[in-house]
Length: 168
Image 1 (cartoon, rainbow, N blue to C red):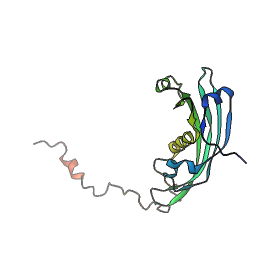
Image 2 (image 1 turned 90 degrees about the vertical axis):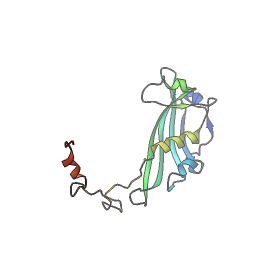
Image 3 (image 1 turned 180 degrees about the vertical axis):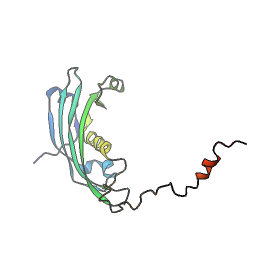
Image 4 (image 1 turned 90 degrees about the horizontal axis):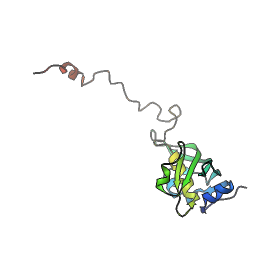
């Protein structure tokens, strides 16, 4: 059984030792995420590997996985979705250090050299949520019922085209 992870971690120490965190985070501790989904499993599965690059920058790479129910904005019915998030972060001590990071790395600014694991996981999952959750069109109960109609026929503004170019 994988262990339940929680609390503050020291990513700089974990990176120096090449640590690996594998386990679960209780979803009940991720209140912001719970407000954005209809329902979800009880835990987020995670696997995070900490390391240092050639320049001494502390990194974390890994994956987060969570099954959620989202509300389709087309038909307003819940549907199942799996969030599978690839994490690749660099830990920095200040906002100024963010500018010096190589491309492809997102920054996580540390406060007193620590970060709350639940907050880190929750932020990454929130960023992975779709802006507008939708069923795939072919399985959505609303189907094509609300497709926009072509505007070629009887366009009320067609008369403006005739006036174009005529100057008094």
